[in-house]
Image 1 (cartoon, rainbow, N blue to C red):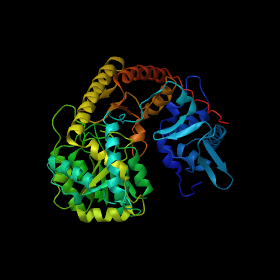
Image 2 (image 1 turned 60 degrees about the vertical axis):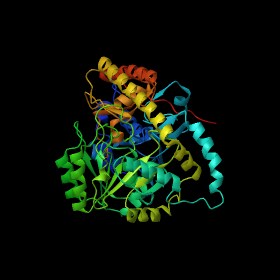
Image 3 (image 1 turned 180 degrees about the vertical axis):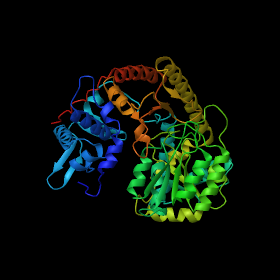
Image 4 (image 1 turned 45 degrees about the horizontal axis):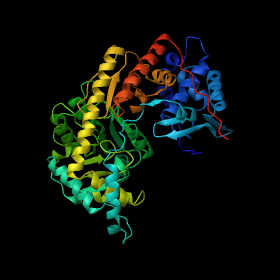
Length: 489
């Protein structure tokens, strides 16, 4: 067990805010079963990591204003089903039951693997057709690099040059010495946290946000602050105030087709954000992973770094969304003085990105091949958006959303705080969802749900039908049953 990973009663209580109303069915199930189901749901969708020490029974009972007996019975139920392990004198820890495996979006039972379930928990596409040829060409080129040790902390020169040309074409003059190749955008954020923050220093991020970003911040033990994105995107004055008052050492933002809302930050807001960061002595980590996925609407404003005159911006990109998540290649663009600190921090993490992966990325980013891939991606995403929005208006007209002009997801405002309950109900209809609280910094956003646009039109059409049936179950008060863990010999 990892003894230094724990959650307090009041923290868990905030994440369980709706368990009383959403955790019980019409059959009047005991409250302890409702509480156990709610905690189990947090473990399954990844909001409570494995080997996390849960609060003591009395601590959680006081925070929820219920009896200790109810909490004790809920913990016992979780132990009986394998989601909790308790040791005398040590506490109770979240666990992986027999018959379950860990995925990027939480726990998945073998029963789910064998069934015909639609998984809408991940917004990422399958590999493009061009990948096979790119891999073959990269393999032919690899011998040029095998004479040495193979460690390139900054990345191989051809790929850095290519990324630099891409930024320059977007109106941000860039040289290769301003680029580091990383193992994806998540690693880029992790390196920035390691290089530029210390424990207990303030860190600012949006809410909702990329689900793994808060986890990276907590691992760095920074003080996490959030800025809420509204239905119209970023409120310039409130964002500016948040930066100047909190004075974060680092702030993480997704201004281009924001994940998960699909919003685009205006040019005016970008300019005032950079000015506020300079005044506060803050660094901005700007995630541009979705910037190439515009399928209609107005062109994007200039990159945030194009407004920066004081080396306050680190721009982050990745191959994972526009190309393929299985290719763990990303990059950071910034001033050489900032990159030097990132390279130093990298020495204790992963040393470098695999040369073969970089060569594959280089081939995929060649002009003609790149345009073909992006053209196909944009067409598929636009068709998916049109399919989902039309189906939602027909089947679930009480839900509200804003049609995105790019990116890979649709952010839906539900008609009640039922996101977690809806996710559980959807399981019985063969549908896996990512509830709104997965994208929150503090476990809120029960009024919201993210739907990815990466599945096929046929899969999304079927998914909306199942989603509508699950919503009907929640409205009728039908509790979703939980799959019994399979015992693997």
